[in-house]
Length: 425
Image (cartoon, rainbow, N blue to C red; front, top):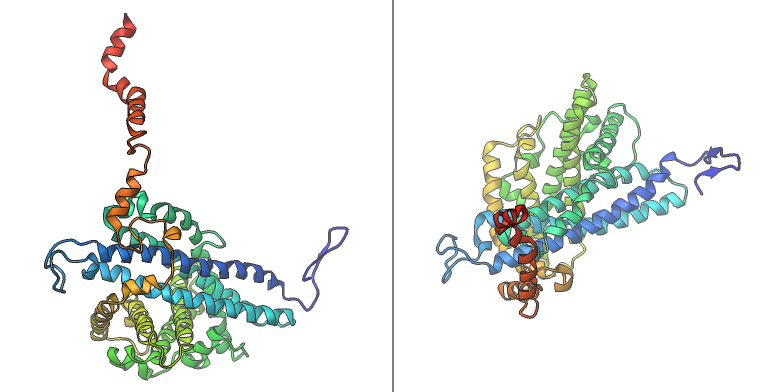
């Protein structure tokens, strides 16, 4: 439809077709990766959170008073590793659905001959493929670590799973390379604003226009950068404004550096950070948009909105340097401390709903394939049952297998000296 190969081998395109139309297929595949990564991470978070709720270790070390030893999930360090992953997981589900709808709308425009949305769609797909696969793959490994030694057992279901999913950060575009595609698109829009050119209206240009009048940072700090963190945490619109301002500020700073002569090669690390900041904004925006589809009186709304706030605070805590270095409206060290304290509080609050939240992901025991993450909570009973099903441990086959292995592998080593003497004779 969009390309012709003549009988003599000459390749041609209709004049009204954007050469980047081939991006549509790549974007579709990346749309599927974004969707798949939400399901991939769901299996890992379900396993780790269920197991951490069942496994008990030490007495009186956690803040909550319990009889006997404390569930591992009550320990702050375990919560800090697993609960933000749960928030990211829910954000991924919302993002995958919203981005699939965005893709369908853009393809409908393309079929009508409007190729305008294609570039922004491609840039967003690159950033989301990087964001979701990075979070999912490193999240699986974090879940495996949080399960302790049992996490590295084949019965956890996480080892082979991690190996099978790891290539997602490389295929369909290496994540470090894809980030350059996203960053270049954002920088192109900033430079177009500076040149006074007309730019398309989309989710990227909307936050750039809002925070970079004429493509440059404002002279005074926006009000939302000066808000107490507790007020930010209760204001979803201000949260999106701050995340958008962070990404826009990083884009303006990098555009200034490159305009002053900084080479593309020297800009690559900053491009990674810009891509991540842009994707943090897009994911948070999709998540909030998805939550607005809930009925106002929905009993799910308070918990899911708390997850969105947790994700926002976690981004700030993980990237506090970005906030401290803002040219305009920089955060103070005191605000960063507030972020850390409030994040710990929200994590503790979400912990109370952590097991129901992973149960709601709907991963069956068959798909989970994990003794640690069983929905019945009978971790150790299932672990022992699975172990006893191994032919080596079964009464009817175990002795014969052990005898065969002894004769073939161990006996020659144990009797090596005697075998040498017999050979000389």
